[in-house]
Amino acid sequence: YKDRYTLPYTNASCDGGGVAVDRYGTPWVGFHDDRVVAKVDRSTGQVLEEANIPGRVHGLVADRYDFIWADEYQEKQITKIDALTGQVIASYQPSDGLCFRPYGVAVDARGRIWNSHDGACPYITRFDPVTETFERFSASNGSATLDRNRGIAADSQGLVWTVSSSKNKLAVFDVETGSHVSTHNTCNTPVGVALDRNNRVSISLLIDSPVFQRSMPNS
Image 1 (cartoon, rainbow, N blue to C red):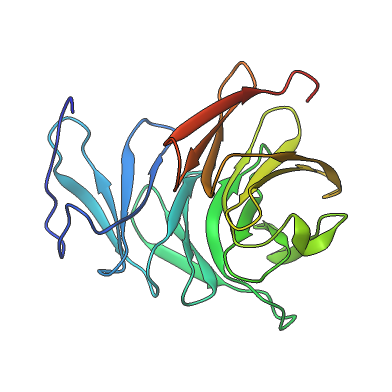
Image 2 (cartoon, rainbow, N blue to C red; image 1 turned 90 degrees about the vertical axis):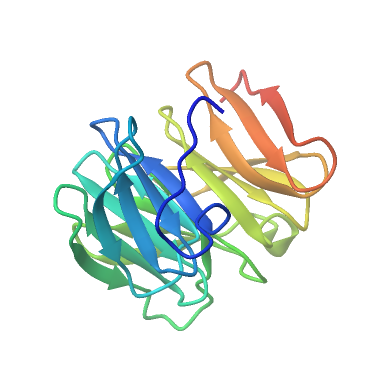
C-alpha cells in the first residue's frame, strides 16, 4: 500500500461497497452494511462528506455532472448523490416489474447510468437521468450470455462491456442502440471489467488467476 486508512464505519477495513473518483480527483467509498457513501480526503483519509443512502452499497460511479451513483442490489434500486454537498437526491427503480438487481454500475459519455445484474436476470439496463427512464437490453442468445452479470464498463468508443460470472463470458453492446455486438470467452468466474486508454480489457476473476487482460483491436 502507498497509504492505508481506517474509516469510522462498521468493520470499515472490509465492509467496502465500491469506490469512485469524482472529476476533482476526490475518492468516494461505499460501505455496504452501514449504508453510507463517504467522500474522503485522499491525503489524510479524513471523511469530508457522508451520504446516508437507503440501501446497501454494491458499486459506485461518478459522472461529469458532479453526481455520484450507487447501486443497491438487495433493495433493487440506484441512488443519486450530489458530489458537492453529499446530499442524497433520489433513488430510482424501473416500474416494469422485471428483475432489477444492480450489481455493477458504469456511466457513459452522455451521463447515462448502466447496470449489470446479478442472479437470473438476462438484461443490462440503461438509466437516463434527464428523463428518469430505464431501458433494458438483452443478448442475442439471452441468458447464455447474460446471467449473473457483475462487472460493467463503458468505453470512449461507444461500447459497453459486461461479464457473466456463471457463463464465463464477456459481452459487448452498442452504447446508443443497446444492440448486442459480440461475445467473448473468459477464464473462470469473471466478476469485474475495465478498459484502459489503449482499449485493452482487464477482467478480474473470482477463481483462477486474479486478473487477465486481452486486447480488442476491432472494437
